[in-house]
Amino acid sequence: MMISLVHPSRQRLARAEAAIAEWRANASGTLPIEHILSVDADDPDLAGYRQLAARSGSRLVAHPNRRMVDAMNRGAAAATGDLLIGMSDDFGCPEQWDLRLAEIVGGRKDAAVLVHDGIDARILTIPILTRSIYQRLGYIYHPAYMSMFADDDLTEVVRGMNALVDARHLVFPHRHVSVSLDAPDDTYARQNSNRAWWHGWRVFEKRKLERFGAGPRSLEVRGRQLTVDIYYYVRITGSRIKRLWIGAAR
Image (cartoon, rainbow, N blue to C red; front, side, top):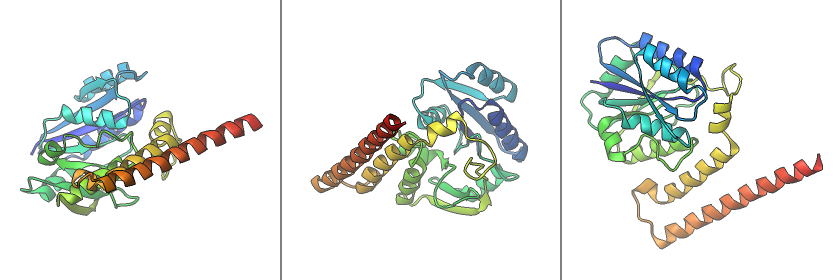
């Protein structure tokens, strides 16, 4: 089994290098692994990422991504593995993670492996998909998302395909800023902004009404989706007015 590590990163050179080192050190060394570093073409650290890819034996792909989801999906498009793993700068891995995942997948053609992230093992916060699943979807994360709710959506989609494999005995620690001592950075702020949350909520709720692409978009469904849109715009407009009012009062 060939494994592809798809690794989007932005302005986190040191953390990206530490993550690459950890994943390589904890691999068994018996399975072929490719690491794809997917970055934004406008990243101020692009030259540094090129150097990092060269010394770590990674493949670098750089595109004019608008959001994290774009970087993940463009990295996945360059992957050649039988198993695709969407890693990130703040995700760790257990020892011999490659062999353990290969054993769990076994002979399954369609599998999406749900592991424990050390926080809340409800959803695929780290996407682990067989190539067949990736090819059926055409993406790792649905391209309508910015960042937030993309993993919720993926979980529901693969559950509907009866492809979700429970492997929550394996812990891939998510060292998210909300549970670590790391200070929030610009990348965190971008991916976890209020705008990204509400955008993701809107896309998720609308897709849920059509069973994440598996159900019909009847007039009734579209009417309920319109209700979601109206609620979204009311909340967003209200937030903007509130910010303007607070700014004027200072």
